[in-house]
Length: 141
Image 1 (cartoon, rainbow, N blue to C red):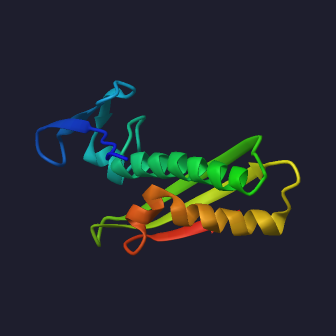
Image 2: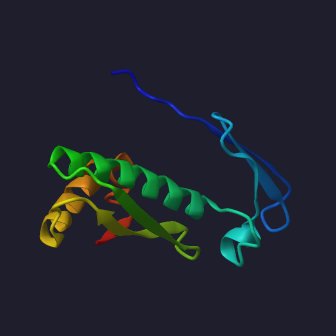
């Protein structure tokens, strides 16, 4: 299977403290999203940040992985809710932690089995695989 590539571009104008950027993605799904350092490091002010976008990417990717793992195990999900929280440590210049809070509704799925399958899904999630070893990933099921 060939590699799947997706693109994003930001145009940044000005210095870090007073400048801003505008994000575009290749699909056109996100167009003209503004980013600033103050919205990243202080109050969001209705703007997004790299950490918020990474949390969104991880939540989406993990939900897809969990849906697949559950279905393969005979528990086709009716509904999955995945909330991701990404922690950034400005002093260390690192993203340090990602917490995935998971709720699943699937016929016949018992809590202990969900725990097992949720862990399996984390292992096959491409975003988890990209972060693992650099970012602490915690599952809350």
